[in-house]
Each structure stands twice: as C-alpha cells, then as structure tokens.
Image (tube, rainbow, N blue to C red):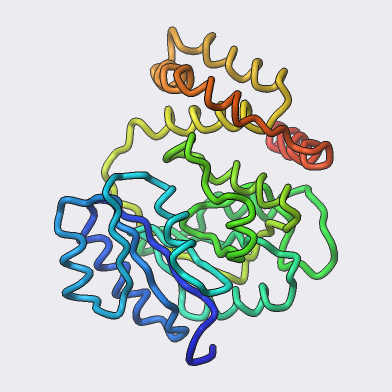
Length: 291
C-alpha cells in the first residue's frame, strides 16, 4: 500500500466506548495504515474524549443526534479516499484485507461494493452469511472475485466512494436492522456491481448482550424495502403477512406498528427496481426458498 493509502475506514458508534477502543487498537495497527474516521452518534459515555485522548491519529466526526446507519453516510462524505471500508465498533479488518480490496477495486472499475468474508468471535468461526453469499445464483461478467450479490453485512463491506454517493447511501427511512439490502439494490441500479469477495476478511466480535428487538427491526426494514423498491403486489403481500402474524408473533406486531406510520413516506419515495434487477431479486428469493 502507498504511504497515502487510497482507502479509509468509517466507523459509526453510539455509547460503546470500551468496545470501540478495542476496535481502534486493531485498525490503527493495520499494515495498510488506512485513514480511520469515527462518526459518533451523540454518545454520552465519553466516547469522544476517549478517541481524542487515546487515538489522536483517528478522525472524529461528532453528530448531535443518533442517526443510526446514516452516520456512515456522513462519514463517506467527510473522507475523500476513493474507497471506504466500513467497520462497526465491534468489528475490524484482518491485516492485508484492505490491500486486497484496493487491488480488486483498482482492477475492475465496474465494482461498486465488495461484500467481504466475515469471521466471528475469538474462534474466528465463519459467519453463515458467507455460504449464502458464495451460493448466489446471480451471474456477472468474467473476472469478478465472487458472484454478484444483492446484500451484505454492514460491518464487512468496502465501497467505491463514487458508487456509494451515487446510490444515495443508506436510506433514512430504515434506520437500523436489515438496511443493507436496499443499498445493494440502489448501487446495482446506479450501474455498479455488488460482489462477494472471499479473499477479503472482516472480523466481528459482537457483544453477548441480547437484542430482542432485532427481529422486529429486520422485519420492518424488509417490509419498507418492498414498499420502496418492489412491485406493489409484493409490498401488499409482505404487509399482509405481517398483519396475519401480528396477533401471535410479538416481532411481527412490533414491526407492523413501526411500518404503518412510515408508509406515507415510503410511498412518496417509491422507485421500483428496473425489470432486470427485479428478476435477479426474484431469482434470489426462489433460491433461498428451496435451499
């Protein structure tokens, strides 16, 4: 990697100072020496003082409110490297991974985003999402590092900055939980490829604290994504599924309650996928249904 590397790492965080410190120790020790920017979602636990005191070489962008994944958008706008890798405050990149990502992106200007291989915990167990990405039935041009995909993990992705900005980044309607699919759609529609890159590895060591709301927020994001980008019958069917499940499923009930006040905004922002991308989404759905 050159002395002035062409890649930055953007981390969005909120009130996880101790875990962020562990992540920054690893990122600042990488041989690639990437620019690192922490975008702080209005933390109240001393995050900003910790970054300034312990990591003076790390950039800090303080936000006045917790905007969730939209902090990544602010980070991408703030850095000016051609490539941006994303980490969470509990994830980082293996040594050499960012250099490999730069090599892949330099070699193929058609690629807008690399979905990296992810390993989890101290045991470095492969995340099940790796198998799903590797088994993507989508086909693309020759020479890609892996198959085209229409999804990724937010903490294991490297984007071409121009592609990310052209797609608009993360959508403000979704907030946290399953927001990556919509961005993968939008980058693809904007003319770039989203592809799995198993040679590029991210490490994720999530906290053990339970997140009972996670299933509801993912269902909410899935449903809003259908309203924003899928044909109307798909959106209606998906919403009807939530209505049917709500009486007996607390997650579906919570998701439905969060979707309903957002539907007018989703309708105003509707931009259905072009036929070729919609066909790829349906192919993925059929493959997942039979696997």
